[in-house]
Amino acid sequence: MLKVFILVCIVLGVAFVAYEHGVKSTSSTNTEVVATKTTSDDAPTSSESKINIDAKNIESEVSRSLVLDLSGQGLAQTPKYVFDKTDIEKLDLSRNKLTGALQAEIRHLQNLKVLDLSNNQFTGVPAEIGQLNELEVLDLSNNNITGLPLELANLTNLKVLNLKGNDYSKTDLGFIKEKLSVSTIIQVD
Image (cartoon, rainbow, N blue to C red):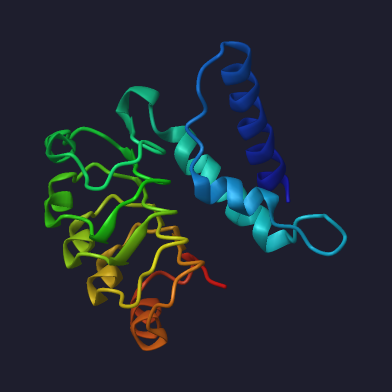
């Protein structure tokens, strides 16, 4: 409980400093969705609070200079230059018009810790995502994903996987879940 309290204090402190300095927050859509989901009493459940804290804690560790935020740009495809930014730790492609699957070149972004692909029209996920050894947060929420690559099971550092709002294969997820760490938080509808 003390650790949770300390994490909350850190997150609030970072948010306050960012607000005071007019810095744009780099919180992902995943975190915002979790923060607004409540029980009938309008209070977050303890597991939702833990997910919220975990995702924010990971993201607060990512330096602002290592973030590429292309959210809400109306993109129909991911610009090729994105895959040359091999030093970035967070890539936010949320709230665009991306379809199909993300390009296989995603494998070049070996330093990624946070990948936010939420709120697009993706129907698939490339197997190459399984090569992102540093990835800790993968937000695939609110897409049209029907199949999950079994290579997601290779993400040994994954802490949060958000699959809400998709019609993915339960069989695929079952296999992936068996291979991931028991501490990995998998968000589903």
